[in-house]
Amino acid sequence: MQDLKLEELLSKAIENRSDEAEMLLWMHLICTYQIRLKNDGASGTEGCITVSPVTQRGASQILAALWANPDDGEKTLYEHWYREYALKLGGESQISKAQADEVQVLRGRLESNAQVVAVELES
Image 1 (cartoon, rainbow, N blue to C red):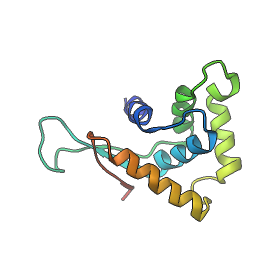
Image 2: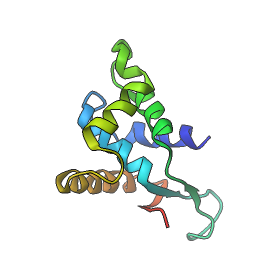
Image 3: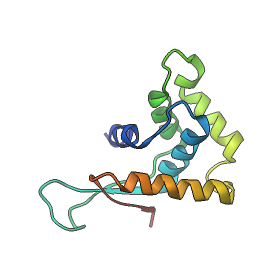
Image 4: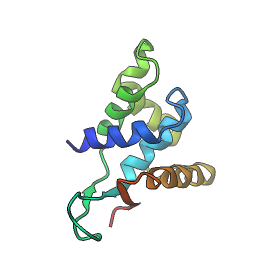
């Protein structure tokens, strides 16, 4: 359920689904941040639904499903994204300052969605 909600949110937020570098930064975001969503019928932040950070495998599966070209065999497999995340970003704690800055831009893009209350590091 959570992965389906994330896939829906990302499908609206990702500008270029054929940009592997951007997709990997989205993967970093959903692996390290929790997303609080409005709960229809509730007011304030008390009724928010929290989507916890996902595992690298879960994030890889989401990216594979969202990849722009379904005929691009390897990039439609979660294994590709899992491997590329480890090789290019070095895992969750190894991103560069420039990549961290870009993640903040993506975070802002996600927070501009009316369903999203906040995107924040897991507490």
